[in-house]
Amino acid sequence: MQLLKEVFPSASRVAVLHDPTNLPLVQMLPTLKQAATTLALNLRMVEARSPEDLVPAFKLLKSERPDVLYVLSAAFFVTQRGRIVELVNAQRQVAVYGQNEFADAGGLMAYSFSVIGQYRSGAIFIDKILKGANPAELPVEQPTHFELVLNLKTAKAQGVTFPRTVLLRADRVIE
Image 1: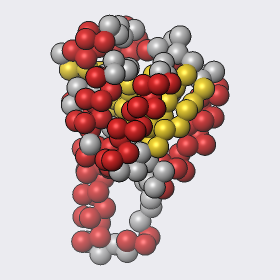
Image 2 (image 1 turned 180 degrees about the vertical axis):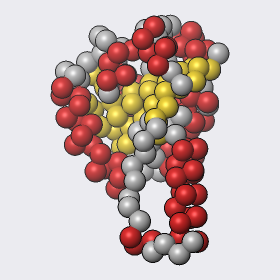
Image 3 (image 1 turned 90 degrees about the horizontal axis):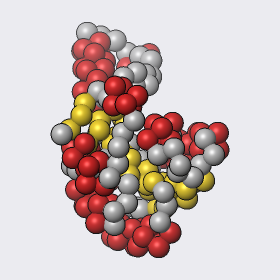
Image 4 (image 1 turned 180 degrees about the horizontal axis):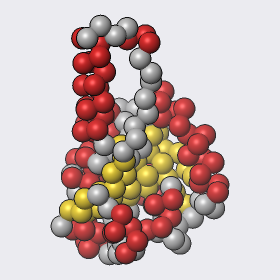
C-alpha cells in the first residue's frame, strides 16, 4: 500500500481484486485494510473465484473507475495473469500486483516475495528432513526477501511516471 501511495500520491480509491476462497489472502485483508486507513485510502473489495468471474469483476471496475487496482497474489490469479493484465490494460486502468509474474506479463508494477528465495528456503527444509530432522519440529518461516519489479514499457503506455525514489528501490526494471 505504501508503494502504491508513493507512485500514485493523489489516489484515494483503491479496488482490491481478491479470491475469497484463498484463506491466506482472507487472513491478510484486515492488515491490508488497516494500512489503507493509515494512508487515507478507501478500499473496494472485488471478488473473483474463477476465470468466469473475471469479466464481471472488470465490468464492475470499469463502472466504478477506482484510482488504482491492486491485484492480490493468488495461484488462480497467477494462472490467469495474461488475461488479467489484458483486461486491466484494455480498460486503461492502472494496477499494481502482488506477484512479480504480472509485471513480466505486461503489468505496471509488482511487489512480491522472491519466488526463487522461497524455493531455496524449501530446498533447505528438504535437506534437513532428508538428514533426519522431524518436519513437525522445523520452524515456520515467513518470506524475508521481497522484490519490486517495474515495467517501464507499460508505464509509458499508461502515462505513468515512477518517482525516482521508487525507481532506485526497484530490484528489476523491464524496459
